Image (tube, rainbow, N blue to C red):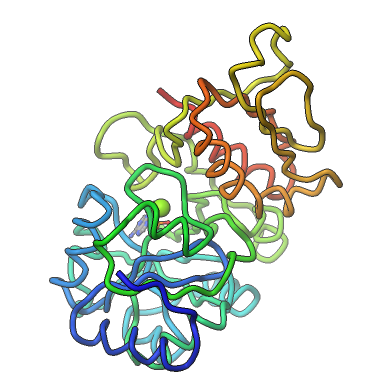
Length: 318
Ligand code: AMP
Ligand code: MG
């Protein structure tokens, strides 16, 4: 594996590797992605292998512009077009009818494909150099903490990825929001764009974000257990007695707590978006300490708080 600073030469090498059927990790504004050319079923199969991701869990296809979008989806219904107009390039994923050229492995056999136009300059430069849509889930082992730095990718995926483009820390730090139209607009995943912002554009969304138990959820990826650190984590509404804090780490929202072996505060200013940007970074740091437990304070549900609460609930599910 080579971790390369994402300059023009490195992006050209990464594009060449993708063109030759390899997988490449790269930064987006949400988290780092592990990408392959979306039309290349063999290359995409390697993503599932490297991540140990079950093939029932479909990938998000990244496109540069409207022209590339038209090579991936059959059509864009009016409400989806409104959202694309408002939020693209950006952290919103739309589930739309796929073109036959998108192989079934990308969509877990579904006739729909999840697609997004990223805003990160490195992701865009890579798409422009590759000239192909790139299928890319998060660049972490399936079910584990999402990567918000090139170092997270290196540490979690090791030698299995040919090139990691290092574009620094990802600005949003949490995955995209996913909306489907079947045909009613439906929220499939809370993410970096608040539900309220989407509803302000197109009216109320059906909510299909509730975790489902079992191996083949109705909306793929709505798994009960996900985003998990190695250290057991629990969400707490009040602090436990001092005596049981010493061996554990604390993840606070706005405030710290005394008596813990280590702690991080997601946003001293109480901002949900700042907290979302720090969530995985701090969980990686606390997890690396190998303590007996992480106590995570419950975060307020407004704005991106819903996305944070969703990640913590799945991370703590047993
Ligand atoms: P990741 O790329 O790791 O953030 O995961 C992508 C997620 O997108 C999946 O886990 C699914 O929840 C969702 N997804 C992708 N494609 C579809 C689809 N065709 N229908 C419904 N959900 C999808
Ligand atoms: Mg993921």
